[in-house]
Length: 152
Image (cartoon, rainbow, N blue to C red):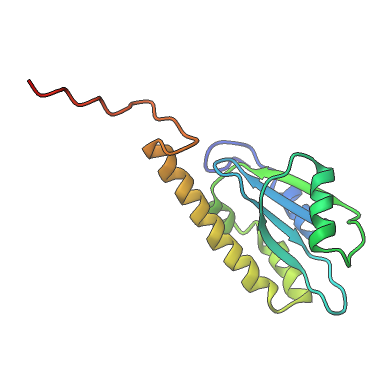
């Protein structure tokens, strides 16, 4: 299927990841934050839905997980992909529904946590877009404002 920006996307593969992976991390093209979902549960610890900083390797993510989910064994499967579209398209496309159903099956709070994370990611994306337009740190504009002429 072609997406909003013309990039091909295998939605069936995305759904399979959302239904089966022990740990899911989604990156976005316009900002560095990642959506991390760990749907695993223990008797007194539910799923994790978090916005996290990027890391430089899988090993670094495992170290992060050990610090934040130390009661859990190492995940059996780790999936990372970059979502090639906008956060809004991810929210409105229905792609999250298998994940939402999976989280709801084990926790009443997970659905709200996912909604909250998606709102925060939408804000990150909007801030990145504003920065791209205005030439904020990390972005360069193609057309800089001309220097004002000195008064004569």
